[in-house]
Image (cartoon, rainbow, N blue to C red; front, side):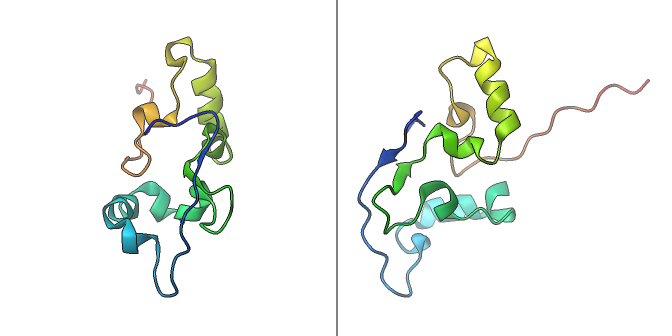
Length: 107
């Protein structure tokens, strides 16, 4: 599912006491658990919102990434090659690895 400028909101059922997102979304949870987001404590609700909220986002808005990744989103928006693309064009929402710019050549 592609990321949008606006979030795709859905009505999510209440999570029964004792259950977590992983109860129903085990594969996605396992993918997230191995990601930099998990390593940095970015839990499901940071991007999707609370499941009890009317604005629970099945697919978070592009602005959700911007709240933590301001520099990267600004760069993406300013690059003509990336026109029409969003974070998830290259980085799957729950399966991604951190990448770093190569170090400048030693002089």
